[in-house]
Image 1 (spheres, rainbow, N blue to C red):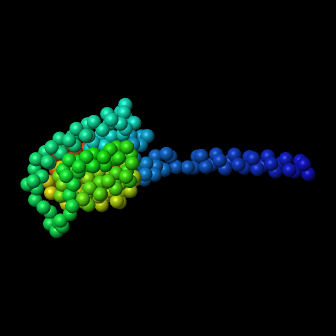
Image 2 (image 1 turned 90 degrees about the horizontal axis):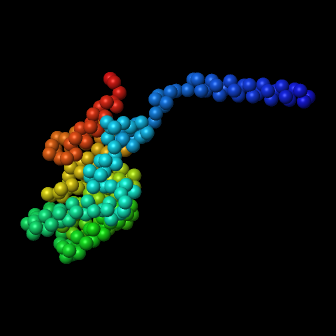
Length: 243
C-alpha cells in the first residue's frame, strides 16, 4: 500500500513538471502579451520600456507648470516658478480687468476685492501643489461662483481640470478643460488643449487623442506645446495597426 502511494506521488510530481514546462514553452512572448495600459504608459513615457525619444509625462507637466514636489528640495521652491508666472499674469490681467467685456447671460453676483480674490486664488493653488486636489477643486469652484468674470477665472477653471487629472478622473477632467475655452482672452487655451489629448490617451481613446493633439497644432501654431503635440501624434500614428 505504501509503495502504491509513493508511486502515485512520484507520478503526480512528474506530471506537474511536464505541465509547467509546457506552459512555459507555449505561452506568448512578453511583446505579444503587453496590455493596452502598458501601451498608454509607453506613449506617455512612463513605462519601463520608454526611450529618450518618447515623451516623458513629467516633462510635459513641468512645461505646463505642474511639477512634482518630490523632484525639488522643498515645496516652496516647487511653487516659485509657477507663482512668479502667475504673479506676472495677475499684474497684466489687473491692468485690463476694467476693460474686459462681460460674458453673455451673466448675472450680477457679489464680487471680492481684487486683492482678496488673488489671495484666495493663491491659496487654492497652494492646495493643489500640496496634492490636496479635492480641496483645491472646492476652492477654485468657490472663486468661480464668486466672480466668473475675474481675470483669473480661466486659470481657476484650468486648475480644476488639472486636479481631476491628478485624481485620475479623466472624464471629469475633460469636462473641466473644455470649459476653459468658454472664457474670452484666456491664456490657458493651448494648455487645456494639450491636456485634453493626454486625457483621451489615458482613457485609451487613441484616435480621439490624436485629433486633440492635431487641433492644438492647427489652432495654436505659435504655442510652445506644438512640438510636444507633434511628437505625440507621431507616436500614435506609429502605434496604429497596419491596414
